[in-house]
Amino acid sequence: MAVLPSKNVITTSERLYRAMLILYPKPFRQIYTQEMVQTFRDCCREALQDGETWKFIHLWSFVLYDLLITACNERIRSYITLLKRLLGIEKEYTMLDHLINLDFALRTDVGQKRSTNEDNMTSVIPQDPQILAKKGALFVVADGMGGHTKGEVASEMAVSGVSTMYYQQEEEDIPVALIQAIQSANQSICKESEGKSAKDSMGTTCIAAVLRGDTAYIANVGDSRAYIVSQGQVRQISHDHSPVAELLRAGKITKEEARNHPERNVIFRCLGTQSEVEVDVFAEPVQKGDILVLCTDGLSALVEEDELLSIVEQYDPEESVSQLIERANERGGPDNITAVIARIGYAA
Amino acid sequence: MKNIGRDPESLLPLTPAVFHILLALVDGERHGYGIMQEIATRSEGKTRMGPGTLYGSIKRMLGDGLIEESGVRPDPDLDDERRRYYKLTNFGLRVTQAEARRLAQLVNVAHAKHLVFGPEPIGGA
Image (cartoon, rainbow over the protein chains, first blue to last red):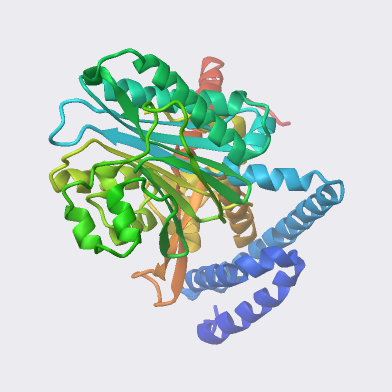
């Protein structure tokens, strides 16, 4: 049997195969041409390594068959998508796709110094596609404070109150619904601690994020934080309601000084102390691949933004939350540590 | 930990191609050709997947959140061209388990009817 001059054969085959990829719809070609040609070349090399011509002919006939069938398949699918778009069904689907592909993880840890965990967190991804499309997915983190185990009660009331109220409301405007949900949780906590002695008073921070379509809505009271990681950059979205953060923002102290400031744990706004509370709301555009991070100060005080960035970019959400908590614990873990990470997935 | 996610059962049954790719990725991340090789090896060469089937499935699996891209880098065993690697997501793993259980149940039925190790049927079609 004749041995083929393999290098030329591969180059020619590759060229031919690349030309035939025109049979696929353009969006498909744009994404996969390079990879498919590369894989095809790997297959050619494998078929030719023993110098047996029949193997190579077999490969070509197999690949041709596969190409024709799958090109038809992709074409039909792309026509169906087009049809859906014309009928107006597609838009709703892409919005849902975004959320359905949400990969997220939540974790909280007592830390090294505290005996109780006063942090709380929750996530709500509505199963009903209509509610999901209207209200989006919700994540809430709260860091409680107070005597005995009161902090635990306050933060639990905040996360459960906000998540229940948010979805019960008729209000369609997300920022308004978020503010109302947080204010209502605030009133419940205030009521709970009404008439109690100062020793039994309680309060909590609260950061809530709604992901819907191409927007992340962040609502904040206190010094728990929301970050968005996008294209290699990390941005802190929320502003801490603490005197130290104000000094830092005004440029009166440096980041380093803020980190070691004796009053760094003091906050001037929280849930549970006054019947009226002002809630900050931010709306941030997000795209696929972006990562939302919510955390309490037990994490943000110990893990720098750069470090956070490299961890969440390197690992999936599940692994990222454990890595982040591990880092904070390695550095003494003086406070409870909570992290929620949600990665907006790749839509089809 | 509360984690209200999607129900893996909602995607079943999977196409054979998708299930093969998921199985190939269970042991770790691979590039397209690596997935093909793994499938061929595991099935003793009986199952082969063409590039069209492979990438069509990959596209939909990315869309369904079963797999994700895990970077571009050269394969030390091949040339130094950079290749795109894929890996299972947590959800993908859960779906693979659910499909494996579904198939195992079917095989159990076949077993009970003596179709797996039973005598070969005699005669033509």
